[in-house]
Amino acid sequence: MTQLSDRVKNSGLTAKEQAVVEKILSDISNTVFLSGAQLAEVCGVSATFITRLVHKLGYGKFAEFKEDLGERYRRATSPYDMFQHFAVAGGMNDVAKNSIVQDMANLTSMEKLLDPLVLEQVVDAIDRCGTVYSVAMFASEIAVQMTGHYLWRLGKPFEALLGVGLSKKVEFSDIGSGDVLLAFSSQRVLKEVRDAALLARRRGAVVISITDNAANPLACVSDYVLLAPVAGVSVDYTHVATLAMINLIINSLAAKNPESVQHHLGREVGHCDTRDLFCL
Image (cartoon, rainbow, N blue to C red; front, side, top):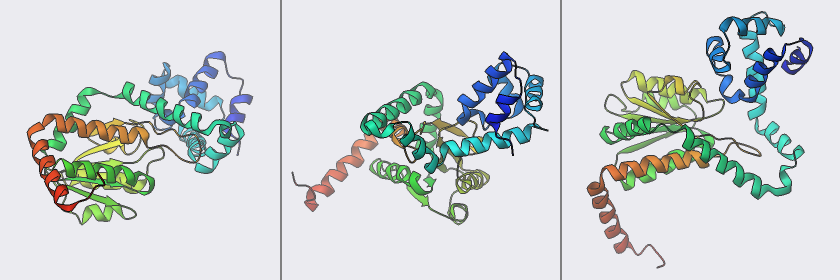
């Protein structure tokens, strides 16, 4: 099978066609999820232009081009390939600097992508709901655990649904109208997380996703989407921006209900004092 990069080199593209291909490949974490019409809009060309370009690259149809684009994206987000690139590119020469710079870049991007209105709607939905259910698998489970801890401190009912079999766990839970499902998954997006979100939505719950792309499969089945870039430097993606987004939600909830927060935190102080928990 001819690689996409070889097709680009050997297709005799015009300068404009080359520029469009470069735009698609340079932003592959976003473009990989787009339809032909959406891709045309992002690139500032017509849908017909994209169709002609795909054919010029030697593909019979757009779906074949998307398949190759998807394979390229999968390699770019594979832990094995990420680490290979990290090692070859000299990332090991200054691990601390590279890691910090990437995390700061993700936080900066998160701030730029943040829609204050969507954040306000998310906070209102969580504030009004009966129970917050949260789903994630594998590395993203840390985000659910952190969310649960802080919602407990605010006195908000919370249930974590983690690990393999999420859709079944959601199916056998009491989630329904009046509840919120908070879902975490990024990059290639785990099918079980997406399916759990779909099921929760069918049960009448409000679905909120914290993910890295507004067009990915999880975002597309969510009522509200908050974007937290997760680009890492070595073996996997980083959760720094995701955890910062959780902090943003919790702080907004606390600011919305100061008297309730003071009541719950005051009661917690009393419990801690009677249990001699701390060194100081």
